Length: 398
Ligand code: ATP
Ligand code: MG
Picture 1 (cartoon, rainbow, N blue to C red):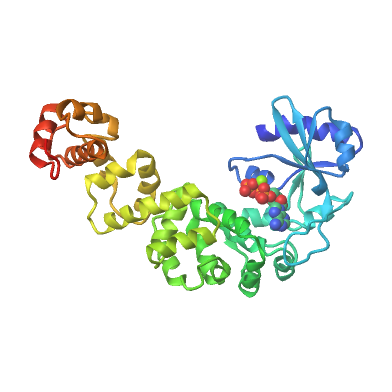
Picture 2: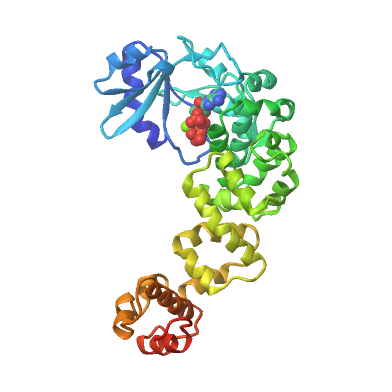
């Protein structure tokens, strides 16, 4: 057993000792068998939530109506969820009501993909009711049961399919892919925030091109905000360099750069996707810079105003797009200034030198000096800056 599971064994044993079944389930089992990094260890049990709470001393009602109780153990915490079925699906979304059951089989049946429907007991024994092990071995992502029905029940699963395809670099089972192509329109029933999360995970993953290809081929993109006329634009991203993980801010910058939209419309697009203020700010600040890199018009002033934090968002995107940015970091490093306080003079220096200068004119002179120093026109030296200002300050009598 991997160490993450070892640490959680007391939870399984305690439930077993009280006569309940308990298993590791979901992504952790899949990732352990793939020897990938394990995120959170999820546990499924035949015990009902009240019974789980009676077995452990410290618990939190995380999602009790869905059967999830968090068990606190030493410094770790584990989500323990009662076996359940989701039988009544309305509106193509996951149901609000779940039915607790005592059967592992029923619980595994409601899961999305065969590789996500494996259970592992405390001895490391695997329960594999849908040939998930074989799919895992052959790197195939396949819906549990009839894919048409499963996507009809919960349309988000179609986005989960393309997301897992990118994260796992698996092939999509043809019947599963056909069902997505058939039902893609149902995705409009799903809350944009949830589509957003899966989309970002898909685009941030190393093998994003795999999921993106399916996203385009199956027409899923046409059911996403602001994308239905952007198929060809989105397809340009298939030519990106692979193998680079991105942050979510970078994902939106990359997508915005691919779209054939005027600047105003990019903002509207980002809002339609319910992106965060930070993501929108990053894109509005960096998209013009990215376009300048493409046109080889990038100035030192652009680099200075972007700043180091934004450049860490921009550089991976530019590299993915095949733009040569190797020199960008060095060029930024070598700027004479990186922030206002690096300038050899301050507002106070200006008033000492030129007592007649007041108010907004002080800021204007500082700005003029900063631009000149960044551009390499003047060394970052008080005497040189004074001389420069005396020569160049227009509209101000010094
Ligand atoms: P990750 O590494 O991203 O956490 P995961 O497989 O653990 O991947 P989760 O979203 O955490 O994914 O879900 C945990 C498990 O719950 C899944 O492995 C799957 O068995 C089940 N599941 C989650 N969402 C759905 C869904 N919409 N339909 C069916 N089963 C689902
Ligand atoms: Mg998970």
